[in-house]
Length: 151
Length: 162
Image 1: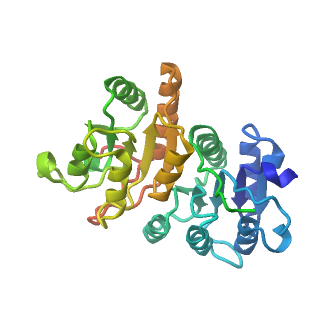
Image 2: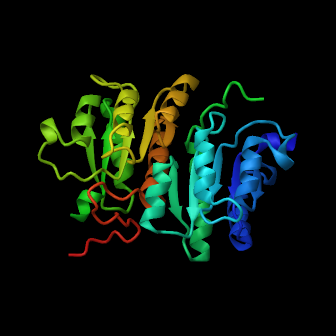
């Protein structure tokens, strides 16, 4: 099953940013290791294997890249729900967002985000940031083991 | 003032690993000061400004690099105490340890570690890893604002003003 190999879940509603991130990450992982969802509700469906993802293999990604401002369910709410569930509470989550507001940063850390990254406005810098952070979380960081009782 | 914001706390009891990490971090183009604590008790003293560190400016380090196996107070216990205190619970903590045991990895994430890194045994690899982690946490990551309401350290623009 292809989704079984997903290493990064990218939650991004902006098509440009998505394209850029996908391109930047391509050197690090094959296309099928990256799954993109475009709103917060779909991110939750993916994470909890519900709705359109009811049949996917219940294996957690190594990293979730989460935008803050998202349609349907806001990024902070997605973060809150992932942290509240034993199946998903340990997944490394990195906020990748346009907001540099102190309140957003504080709230994200309070809710248990692993890292908070402000998207650089410059095109090339964003690509470089995506590549660097992808490399860090896939190759340097040791992801938590999957929860034992899932599936 | 600004320099205090840019402090990293390295908690490491192995002198070799300490030297390598310091060397790697120094290579990054950031004016970071690295404070080294050699056991868990000293790390807590530093974090909570007590004992030897009663007189330090009460600003949180930007990042804590924490070994797991430490004398006096174990790394996991240090992490637990940092996460239990309102002054320190948001500080990014990266575990940098020799253990790749699933149990240790899970415990650290459960206690709120931001990241877990297994120390490469090879010296060159260790250097590269330390550089990459420095790059991520010092140049890309936006840390939580400091507990005493100081200006959040803005790292990318970290040019000393005067």
